[in-house]
Length: 110
Image (cartoon, rainbow, N blue to C red):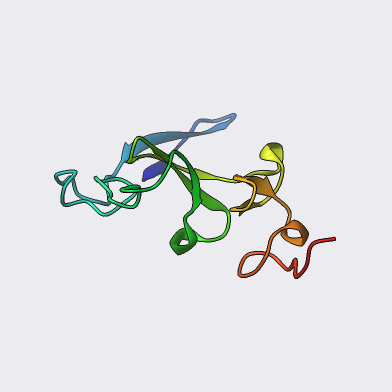
């Protein structure tokens, strides 16, 4: 966490406010085998084909990549990627009207 600490100095004609920074680490380092996914070694990709999968525990906007049975990254959908939520049917980010529940509200195919 970045903390800014203001320091004020005054002279006859002006006031100066400067900021010093301090970085605080709020977590702790651990072995990858002991850290929970997605930071540590995860088995969520074991036995799965290469591709993207919803990370519902993080919310409907998140998905993770699997390559050769290994977890490679956790990503978040943005409007620039095509929508706010991950669509598991297409493997892409999309809008809720195009996604079946629990993340969207599409109930049928036309």
